[in-house]
Amino acid sequence: MKVLHVVTGLHAGGAERQLALLLRNLPKDQRHEVAALTNPGTVARELRADGFTVHHLDMRGNRDLGVLPRLVRLIRSGRYDVVHTHLYRAMLYGRLAARLAGVRTVLATEHSLQAGVIEGRPVSRGVRALYLGAERLGSTTLAVSGQVAAVLDDWGVPADRVRVLPNGVDAARYRFGAAGRAAHRSGLRGRLGLPTHAFVVGAVGRLVPGKRFQVPLEALVRLPDARLLLVGEGPERDALTALAERLGVRDRLVLTGERDDVPELLTAMDVLVSPSREETFGLAVLEGLAAGLPVLHSACPALAELPPDAAPDARLLPSEPEPYARELALLAVARTGPVPVPPAVAHYDIARIAAELAALYREPAGGLPGPRHAARRRAGAH
Image (cartoon, rainbow, N blue to C red; front, top):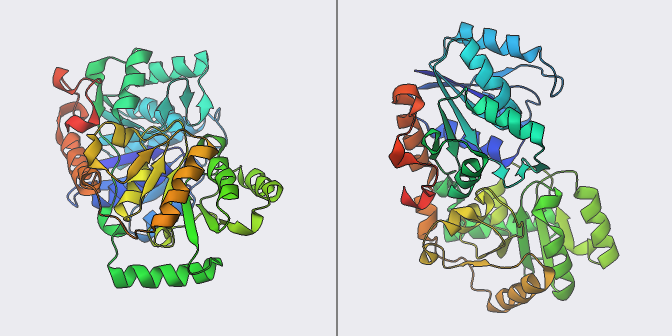
């Protein structure tokens, strides 16, 4: 079986890294290739190094219709059995190209849909109409959480065309023994300019307004001996740096930029924060828990869809500086060290998620779901 994954780009974003993680865990009897419409960045280089074929279609912009015939030719010449699209632009062009090329099994994973927002941008009437029109060209839409499935339902996507297939976390990649953790922690803190005994608050994600990384930055003012380690890159970098200057904490903020060693970087942290008010899944929260960190968060559908005891060291807070400062101060005093990896991490282990996706590829029409897979079904029921 040959599967072509069509993705808008391959920079180091959450959806792109999730795609790479899935590819590495899917069975070897299925051949997977990737077509990036634009921006074949860090993740493309990693996938090629792992032996995956990555095609670059050189799309020049959202209205570059010339990409459509190029994509149709690629699908026809590659004789793919399944086309699987990821992210909005790839969904529009990929579903249409697959149908024009005669592929019947066309899946799409919806990574980034929230009420009124898609991929961090407000949804206009035209965007919604295009989305719904393209959806009819596919076999199944895979929602990464019950929350995303509920939005699709509100938009009018028929429930029998939606299936919840959550994101996964590579739990083993984040697991370090005591000696390995201590070695990484010491070395990384030295290279990052973090004092050995400082209380380090960490956050991982794109530096964009919706992530609300100004919240832990403002909380830092109330924590005189703490440091904030932000792992990621994005358009808010300069604004966050300027805010740190105004708050007088610039010397306690470390910005790493885009990194591919996130599991190791988590060992340099004492706690992970995720102050975003809107998430479609909350992968960074799961990764923090997999690394044995206590987590403070303001939205995580992945945990909301599980029983409370699935993640006892994850605390839900309002996305404001004061509650974060208060809880961080308590954790700074306690300094309990690594916490036990909770059941939630095993529930979302990538091996299980990849096995379910591989089975979907083998079903007629890409696993077109019947009533038992209705959109209202929550990820916790899997």
